[in-house]
Structure formats: C-alpha cells, structure tokens
Length: 224
Ligand SMILES: O=C(O)COP(=O)(O)O
Ligand SMILES: [Mg+2]
Image 1 (tube, rainbow, N blue to C red):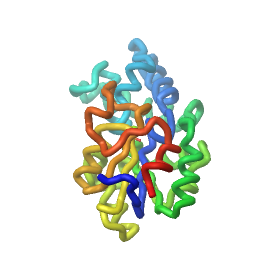
Image 2: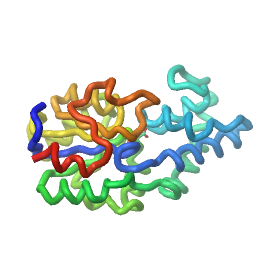
Image 3: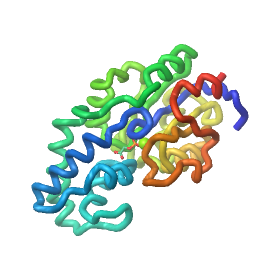
Image 4: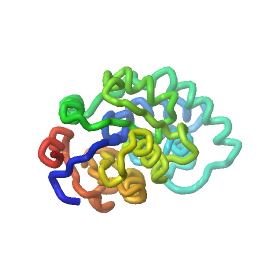
C-alpha cells in the first residue's frame, strides 16, 4: 500500500484497538472461575486470549491455554455465568486508549465513513461503545454474532463495504490482531495495526500489516 492512503471507509476493531477491555474481561473470568471452584486465570493470561469472541475466551480460561477444546459440559456450565457477569460490568473498568478520541475526531473531520467491526458479541459491543462515549462516531457497528462469520473471515468487512457502497480497495481496517490482518487481506482492504493491543502475546509486526502505529493520531500522516 502507498502512503498517504486516502480511504473512503475506515473500519475499526474494538478490543485492544479502541478500548482496553481486559480489566473487565479478566475480572469476570476470575469470578466465573471462583464460582466453578477453580483458581483464577489472572489478567496477563486473559490479555493473550481476547480476540476471538466471548465463547472462545471462556473456553480458553477453562483449559488454561490458547488452543484446544474444553469439556463440552464444562463450557455449557461456565458460559452463562460469564455472560451474566460481563453484562453487568462491560464498562466498569474499560477505558479508551490514549489518543483514540483525538484520532476519531481526525477521521470524522476528514469525512471518511466509519464503522466498528469487532468479534465481541453485539449485546456487549453497543453498551461498551456508549459507555466510553464513542458510539456516535460510527455509522455501522458489526459484532461477532451479527453475521454468520466473524474475523478472520472477510465477511463482516465485505458486508460493511457493500452497506456503504464502497470498493474494498478504497477501504481500510484498523486493528490490533492477526484476525484483523487476515480479514483485511482476504477482503482486499488496507490494514493498519496498533502496536499496543492484544495479539495473543505476539508482536503484530509478524503479521505484516501495511503499517503499525503506536497511537491513533499518527493516522494524520499516514492517511490523506
Ligand atoms: O474477542 C472479542 O470478544 C473481541 O475482539 P475484537 O474487538 O478485538 O474483535
Ligand atoms: Mg482486537
């Protein structure tokens, strides 16, 4: 991709890109574990497990690892406990990353169409965006269960491009994880990643996005 790039549409990931949601996710995971009579996972582990939706997060907590499957009965018992806890405290401790508000103002000011595309279930996404005060920046919000497939599938990105009537080649994804990079590549979007998010403990540069930024305001120079 050539910089400065002039996108018509920018789709932005939520967890690890706009909002540091791990403090709430990990508090709920550890309360769930306590209710199941198990030891806590801790925030550092949860930070590596976010990015593929709540069900996968709970599965990872139960097995204590990124890959693998828990016992189906364990998951069936644990998931509703987590969902109830997280519904109550989806934004209790979650905050915007530094520079996000400024960056969104910059993108809005340049007239790009903005959408939020996350793997977080829609019932948590809307209240979290509202609580941190950025819901109005987005014309379209697609959660992890809004469509039949979530990232790394290109489906949510292509759905947004079609919704706005914008070519994928004129579209940019802004995210923090390898799922964002894979979805963007498969959809034919440009992809810029933030360095500070969650990528399962790996440096996002290994996924070779078009650019990596340390904070949203750097978009000012990369985009036209
Ligand atoms: O895993 C989740 O629930 C959310 O992940 P995302 O916002 O980074 O797509
Ligand atoms: Mg993310």
